[in-house]
Image 1 (cartoon, rainbow, N blue to C red):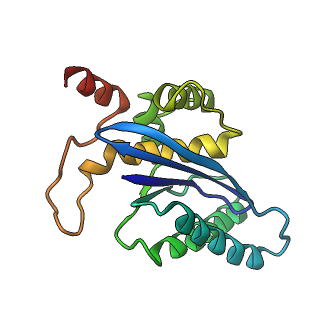
Image 2 (image 1 turned 120 degrees about the horizontal axis):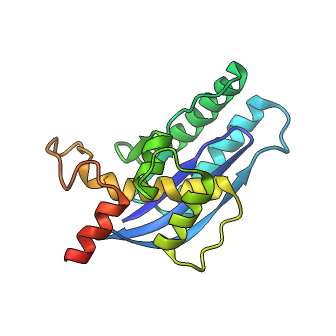
Length: 185
């Protein structure tokens, strides 16, 4: 399964693409989409939408995972982030209805590092352990997007789908539990 992870933002957004099979993860690509050069926020929303369509076209993901809204001190920033996420989700839903999932930041960190309040550096260290020591991420937006994709890869089996409301796999699996499962296999 190919998973596209998205760390949303109104000025820049991280993306991470991985392939997972039987809880083994393979790095495909990652990066940051920058929208800062567009001053008018309304125009930026259209560019955000188009860039997400291009990601789907380029990588052809089976499923997409996006970070849920986070608390920010500024109401204006929260509103812009929510609108940017809306543009992204609208783009993804054009081709991936019932295949777009969202995860809270603490759940993402907990799934990848085993600790819900892990620092960015701990997340990046865990990513290197999971995806290979040669992994070079260029910033937190990129590493967060990869962590979102891995979180979905770990938890995807416990999410009910439209064809089955019965839970599959282990619910709430952490990376630590997945590695233990692999050792016992």
